[in-house]
Length: 131
Length: 131
DNA sequence: ATATATAGGTACCCCATGGATAGTGACTGC
DNA sequence: GCAGTCACTATCCATGGGGTACCTATATAT
Image 1 (tube, each protein chain N blue to C red):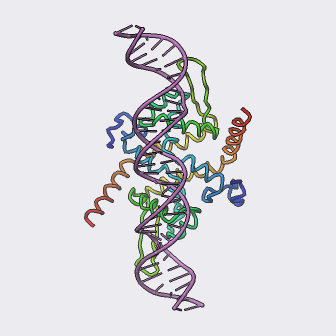
Image 2 (image 1 turned 45 degrees about the horizontal axis):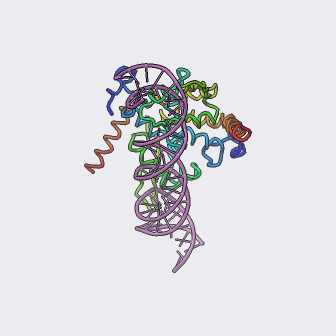
Image 3 (image 1 turned 180 degrees about the vertical axis):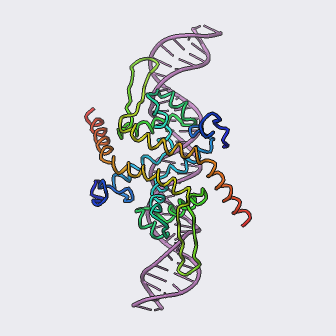
């Protein structure tokens, strides 16, 4: 799990190796909810309910789970205001903002190339049916 | 599922909306095996077994499944040579290469920032124990 | 002749994880 | 006094990721 998984690579880490720390980081990032929650936090600090409304279809369980993972890994900061009804705000850390720029590019790519992929899927289905 | 999920966004797609095509694209990309297989194909065309050795820990089932999804979505091309023992080669399409550059940045990020995240996790655990 | 290795997969089973639904506490507004 | 707000937690169920075994057809080794 330490950096000695690939001493010859630029940063001493190699995500292709299953027990390398960078592999587990990739595992954490490989979630559509991580993309979307980080994307929703990119413009600035947000409350729980705002995130839930922005990320359509996320359940409270998955939103909480995703936020806790991001907090644990130092990408998100959580601030609780002891008022009633409760008020909790989330914001990206420096590390989180750094990552958000990259994840955002992927999100934009998926929006840009959605038609290409839809066409590819259609062609693939077509080929399946006609032989 | 069509582009009318967000007519006002730059490309007519919005990944935050659950039934938008770009959301399903993000869903497809949100897999560590997609990252690693695309990363392994980035330098050039590769055989099945080469991919299996490069992506440490991937099972034949997941490798096949991942490659089929990438092929279906037009990111990877598959070429079969009818010889014995069988020979099958995979390579990125133009669309796949385009994506690979982005995914590669994420993989590099995860290698660069693995120590930061390890430290954050350690601090998080520490806080749990001491209160 | 028999055993083993290769290459690129399938077939099968199991359990962890994701997803859906319901509930909770402490107030405020009607 | 009843519904609504807010940020969750608890519980159940189904999907799908993951592991193992197996397949075909040949070349090589014993």
